[in-house]
Image (tube, rainbow, N blue to C red; front, side, top):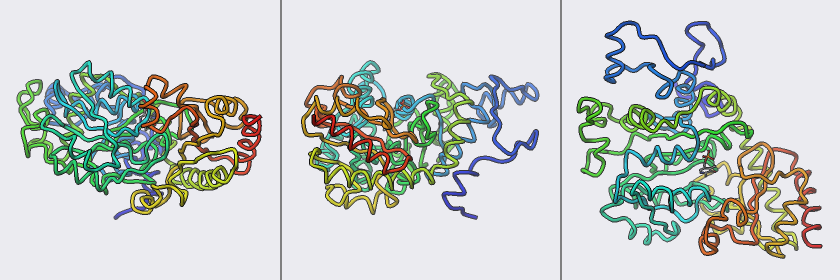
Length: 426
Ligand SMILES: *Cc1c(COP(=O)(O)O)cnc(C)c1O
């Protein structure tokens, strides 16, 4: 029996606790699990039987969250980890190696640009940044050392919408998986797997948890990629010495990536999500569709108000008919273009700073996807490590503020913006 999104966001992966009948998913606050006997322990360690050994690898509360996110995304499996940035490393880890590269969009969360432009070089990995609206450039950037293509569905900070179908076709032609960061859209607004993505990553810190309480991340596998079609992905297709020569793809089929991420990724990188955090995120997901509908309705109203205001130069929201990305909304995220966009304020850097400081309901924080409305001046904060050219390319120039619209009363938010813009213009 297939169920609708509203049902799955509450029930997928969860069942009454077999030990106690507890209806809500218990927080299994335990480090280790007692083996039935020595044979059971051996089978678990050999990956011949699926079960719980140690919470760095698996935990029953985290497992419910993994199944719920995988179900909502239409994937075969998911692995949760300690943050969205951890999820990005976990997604790339089985694919990459020294000398190999990922072709990445220039329109990404600022922290991801930094992670990809600098930190992954320490592993010998390289990111090649390309404008993903230029499909020929994306295709041309894929070379024999490319192992993945990476973009965001609704991209930071401007709320741009990526043509996932076109990019997936290019990645497919290049014989490499497409990884889509679906944080800003959530599975309610967009299902990247339906548009050809192999892997979907999330910062569950944002809309999935929904109220700014805990950090977390997830990697969802579509199960659709043939890791054995070439010799490009030996971690998944070749014998694994740490498991007696087991081949993940041959043994686990469409669950190969997920099993590898748990048995090797979490085991050895240790970017584990804790069960408390999984609990908060499960609570959040129960109301995801309700919140996203309100986030979108508020964003549409507020973006339209800002666009007609004299103190504003431009609003990037893809939900506005004037946006060059508006024609993609219907196909990529039919329930709405999210609630994240940038506003170019007349008066530049100074006016942006004044506006941010004058707002009363909006909080000036480095976060997004909260029930609370948030604002940040990217150029002086999240994107400050980037060069001015990188800032412009990422849509985070000096006169731009990024806004994450919450679920408060839209009229209150408009009144708050109005008074802050008056102060900014003075
Ligand atoms: C926040 C965010 C990340 C990083 O996630 P953390 O949970 O902060 O590590 C990655 N991508 C996007 C789109 C984000 O918004």
